[in-house]
Image (cartoon, rainbow, N blue to C red; front, side, top):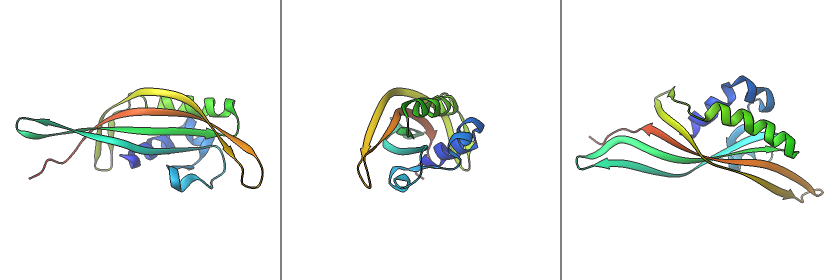
Length: 136
């Protein structure tokens, strides 16, 4: 799931112009220069029927847009939202049937290492409906 998010964002011309390839899991991006995008899967719910696994799941994925200014975070988040909202398609072997924006909020972090600075962000939560392999 996370690889799909990264692929869609770094292949989007608007987002790529702002971040290049600075898009990855939260822990991997901490020492990167701004702006950048982080993501992580919050949870995955598998859809079942009385016959067992339906072959569908819904992952809740948090996507964060980070910049050195509030305006920069808003510009980046606009591109990210447009790239991901209502996305459907196949990346590699993963088929996304629907990606829906569930929530959005502004966030800010204070950095103290080597001097005080702020990092501004916009946080999204996307519900990502995708195919899963049924157990045999």
